Length: 251
View (cartoon, rainbow, N blue to C red):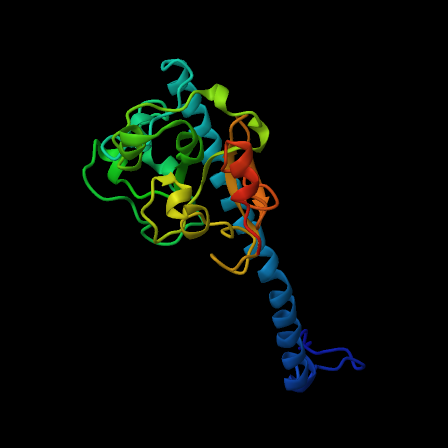
């Protein structure tokens, strides 16, 4: 009987050692994978942060649109600096009652909101942004009891849009530090340095004086400004010419 399972005379079955990786080869492959991962992970992390920065910029742009809608119904007057009915509540309908717009994806956990009294759900919602209080303008035009009412948040009159002379270089909204409760950027509270977060994106971390943050400008645009460009050489939170240079911060 013929044996059909026989191998040709010159064939050779590979041994186990010839079919398997050696330990050295395996270690080399692992090392190469580790090097590639180390090169790729920072790029992936940077791409993820870029996505968050763009989403944050979009939030500020939408808040700027909501502010414009509010002003069209209020004779081009910005929301007043109020301690009883603050800007998140005044603009609530205009940004679609979506409080997620108040949060930057790159912000820390549980960003601080303000203290009571609250006029509505937007007032106590967690929040990453604050609005310009324009207090350099009001400090220049108010005196006596009016200035006292403004300081206490009881001066229920906002600033007219015409007071802004450099619309592309004047900030309306900015990012606040996670642990700060402020609703308004006020110079007499040193909020430009204490409450405004200037290093949220593409940085070595919040407060690191690296990278930059997002801002909504008076001309309707939203922009990423590198540290410390929002405060120096011109303080872009200021409205009056004197304050734009006198309140500029040197780092």
